[in-house]
Length: 101
Image 1 (tube, one colour):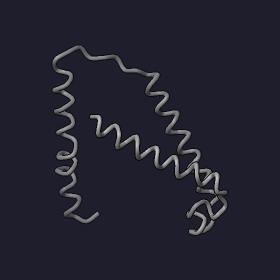
Image 2 (cartoon, helix red, strand yellow):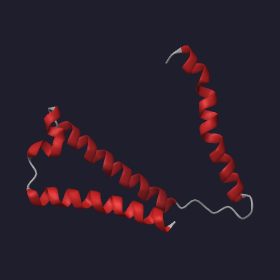
Image 3 (cartoon, rainbow, N blue to C red):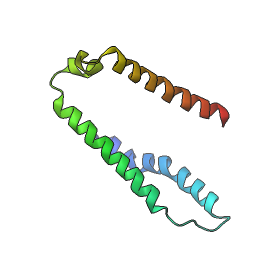
Image 4 (cartoon, one colour):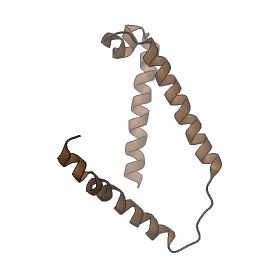
């Protein structure tokens, strides 16, 4: 990090986080504070852990840059169809929810 970047870091962090803190205070100021849902937190951490484990496993199996492209050419048409359908469904869900909101 350069000296100018290090000097600007506190201002950047303040600009990034202060609006969200103020917004959170505005939401909770009018009503009672809800207890933490530890089941939801645990499930979130579980899914993040599983995702990181799969990513680590896949990274250890990758030996060259060519293997990053479509699983090194080892996918069958049916598997590639599922991947494309998953991408489409994800994008369609995101755009659909956004338009509903």
